[in-house]
Length: 574
Image (cartoon, rainbow, N blue to C red; front, side):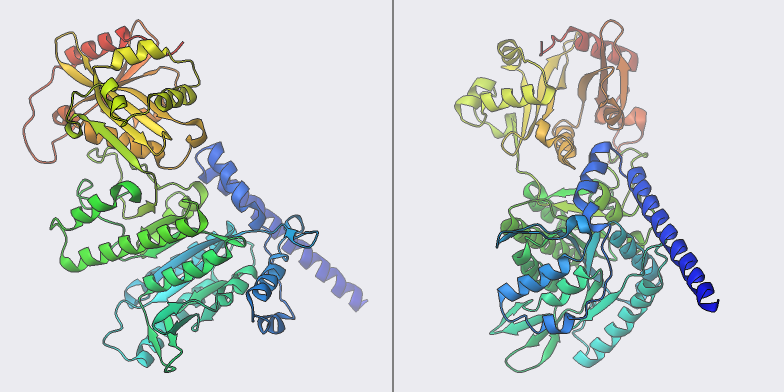
């Protein structure tokens, strides 16, 4: 009878655990759908991370024996693949002949955390965020370093770092994981090795195997010198680079999705945003300008050097991953410990970026408006090459025909992009004739992945206004995070004084336009709405940043002039 009672209790206990786990997984999916802003984002996230949701924290009896077999690249691959086959049945590797097999790819996020007593109050929040990321299918690797070890012996530095890491581990082991299994961690002190002056992560299996078991590897940035047997600390950012280099050699087993720097100073400061952080950095286009801006003198030298080191290190890592994997999907994130601790999927920049691949706010929102939030996080991407053509960079007469003759513009590619983006037939000859002599600015992204055409249009009072005539993104690129923001930000930077554009009243993109304009209105005799922005409205909407005076505008007259222009412009498409 006692055995029956015991079995019954065990059954009830297992049932409760199963019910709790099922509810937790259901709540997880619902939270994902709530946090992603569009169906496209939810679909992209679920397609990428769905195989990770069933990751089992199983023990492997033969682990010690298997680790001893790491004597060749072939054996390393076989052992790692063995642990990959422990995920869920739908994702188990299936042999096809003697060579081909399918496997679940780990989605890796590397974290650099400078451990210090100053951020101890954030350890619990950081632990909760790491647990949340594991729930979402991310496999974190955490590199824990010290701010400065130059004045300490290796023994003292190692002891202090161990104490700080132990505090973080306690929060990780005791974190509330909402029905999911507690997250285990493994400490790694011997990952990096130096031979003849070259540092490498030769024993990368020390982080790969724990990740395949659902464990978070905690890495100390310690290098073992093979020549003299001594150990020393290196910069955590340098350790991140060597780890990334080793991980990219296993790119059939994993992908490096995020590289996160936890920096007390926060993201890269922007003068335009009153020294709060750049929201999105397109390295291919902006890195030179941002480095120059950091040297202007608005920062103290110590802070400037820290920001420069973070930016250059992230750039090196993202370029490394891009060169070795031939993709530009890896995202760099620089944020503060307190922001990383936020327990809100839509405010925590790392969690939100995993879900949507976007910053928590759009980088093209006008920084001068009070409704635009100020943040301390920078999202960094290798990004897109951008070409900006205007009168200032062209010696001859700035006409469409001359740009084509100079091979600065491919007319056929531009026309094909417009047709593809709008999904309509362009009145090609009539449209090109209309803009031939009125082009103000042309912005081209990559190999015509996106483009913007700004023209000079004459108002009824004889004044000219910069008019955003076309804003096009190739259909295959629509939804790529940051692309529209990069183009629109360049448009407004090129025409800061005054800018006008129109959109059909039923266009779903209008909500996006509302957030970026100073005002808008509906034309009475056409299906168009028009939007306007620019510094000439700063006096009406708020004081200018430089404190200078601006002549008052007759807004009623201005709106009438805009309305007349928008109504009379011919449609470009059939």
